[in-house]
Image (cartoon, rainbow, N blue to C red; front, side):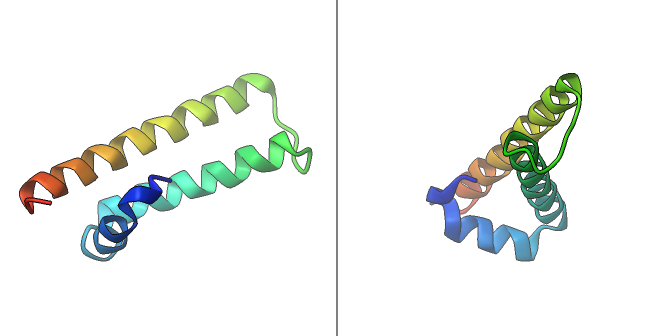
Length: 75
């Protein structure tokens, strides 16, 4: 997720507990969705779509935190 911000993400995961939590939740959802799409797990299609929307929402929130951090630190 957001690989071009790897250094900032590493810093935020250490310094910002909320960011670390949403980053971890995003990765958990990403793995669950991948498991369903590759047939290792089965979910109702509506549930899968809900998980995808939640994952996207977490990514948007993480991105907003990264952009705020960049502005605050003149990066």
